Amino acid sequence: MPFLPKPFFAAETSAERPSGPNAFGALPTWDLDDLYVGNDDPALAADLAKAEAEAKAFEAAFKGQLLALAQTGGLAAAVARYEALSDLSGKLGSYAFLQYVRNTDDPARVKFLGDLSQALSDLSTGLIFFGLELNRIDEAVLETAFASDAALARYRPWFAELRKAKPHQLEDRVEELFHEKSVTGAGAWNRLFDETMASLKFEAEGEEMNLETILNLLVDRDPNVREAAFGGLSKTLHTNEKLFTHITNVLAKDKEISDRWRGFADIADSRHLDNSVEREVVDALQTAVRAAYPRLSHRYYQMKAKWFGLDKLNAWDRNAPLPSADDRIFDWTTARETVLSAYGRFSPQLRSIAEPFFEKGWIDAPVRPGKSPGAFAHPTVPSAHPYLMLNYMGKARDVMTLAHELGHGVHQVLAGPQGALMAPTPLTLAETASVFGEMLTFRAMLDATTDPKQRFALLSSKVEDMLNTVVRQIAFYSFEREVHTRRRAGELTTADLNQIWLDVSAESLGPAIRLNAGYEIFWSYIPHFIHSPFYVYAYAFGDCLVNSLYAQYEKAHEGFAERYFELLRAGGSKHHSELLKPFGLDARDPGFWSLGLSMIERLIDELEATQPN
Image (cartoon, rainbow, N blue to C red; front, side, top):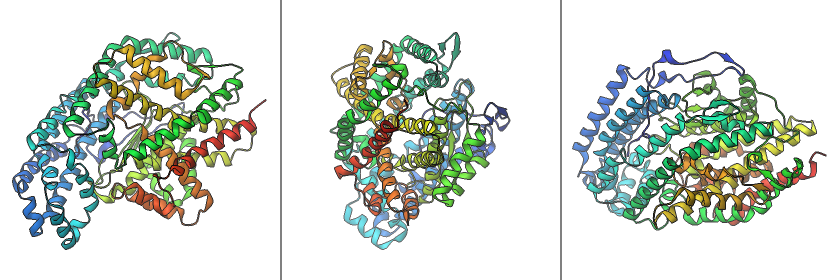
């Protein structure tokens, strides 16, 4: 169906864009004029009116006619028209979302969010028939239509994905009800979570700060600062625990209702369907990573505790910089050139695709009051271009985050020509370019480092990032599975959720990490649990995939870049098995996950062999 943005939007005029130098140099901010120049832009009002009119005209022209069109040769035109409407409505929703995340505290943006969200939901309700009716067409009729119409055959991959949902689709009126109530149902709870998180104030060492800032203090060199940040984070989260527990219960029940009506057997099957990945592949990934906990996270944290002269690390020490860590602050110019040089070393073409993000206002980097925490790459729509959001604090990890999100952006640019229906990439492959961009940046920095202490610091930082991406995210997936499974038997209390979190954390982190009082509530600030249930395994999938890809790249550079670009250009038009085949990789092969995990283990081996005295 056409793009339906997340239920939070905002608006601002171009005059509101802050800029200027700070400790990191002149950080870039978004120029959203390629979408609209403000919420009062006449072009925005015109496009919304056009989308609303086209949605009604589309329904009037095609509802009840799709079988006849498939038989007589007019279906390709209907799909193309549907795709154009998806792009137009997606442009509206993208602009509104990007405006909102820049200042979620602004009431005007919140209102704009609600109004546009409702408008887009209303116009798309009349289009629900399209996918449902297409799925009622007999397979033989569709095959005949594909064979006789090349324009329609181009959309074969989109039809294939659509057909997978056929066993789970409901009667038209029920689908419309589910769709219309999403704004006041799951969407409203998502919005409440985001606005609550953005407005929360955390205190550490007598200072009040937002979530992004206090999380950054957890990687401070001073253990007293880390402990204070840990306490401040825990205290505010506990103060709001009733709300977070309620949101979690409501959304888990909402998903259970939807899954039950649609006939999904497993709590994560709807996500696997969206990701175009088989349940057994994800189960194999989870099993492989959990089996590797002792060799990876348990072993590493035991080593880290020894480096700190401790038997156990406190929870606030898990991501602490090592005594030999490089404390340099990277200004924006240095961060930019570090990443672009690494990209260019792999392929000049990769650098040339990445450069416009820095030159054309496609990145928003500064930390600001009310700005959404974290980082992301928003694809917007194929007729426009992606935008990257960062909260840049000048640390080495921020440079890696830039490399990560820029990889997403490059992927989205390359997939754009597939069009609004087939450019979106399943989550299992959506992290490929981002993690690969990180790996390129890491390897370039490591190769340029000759000082043993700096090299050790780089290696340890990369291992920790990989553990956070693979071990941590599979632990998150295990947490979600337990929460959603137990929610089917009744509401979960805060104590229930806390205990599940502690059990999963103890298993994944191992005996060298002390789960201090206060850590039990840390599940409550993870946004993926709210916005995208079971999304998290995509990070582990992507990291292991990239580790395997990079191992192939190390074996033979010849022709690799070309095959890599073809993978990215495919967007969502090919299954992961087809895209990995040219690299000699198969995610259904247990050896695939072993290869990816072994790369992490080799880095830990190298760390152990070169650990400081």
